[in-house]
Length: 71
Image (cartoon, rainbow, N blue to C red; front, side, top):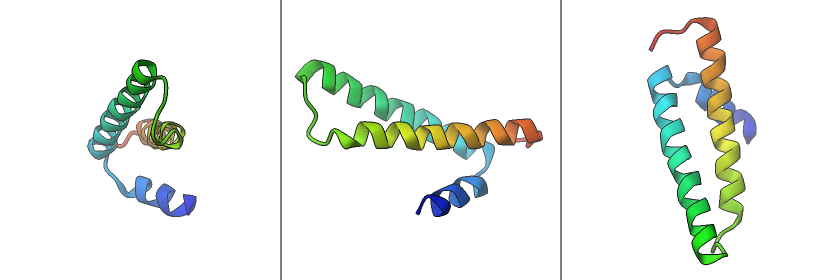
């Protein structure tokens, strides 16, 4: 399953990856904010999963930038 996600991310353009990064960063922020305000989350596994997905996106962004891919 991780291979499918990895391949999907490789096929995305630089601007699409940057957009995904922003939306995932916002989602992590919202989940952490909810956790700090309510001291619990309905689905606590989403925080870890979202952080991992953002890390995958950031990895692909870094690799594409090192390769010199233009947006």
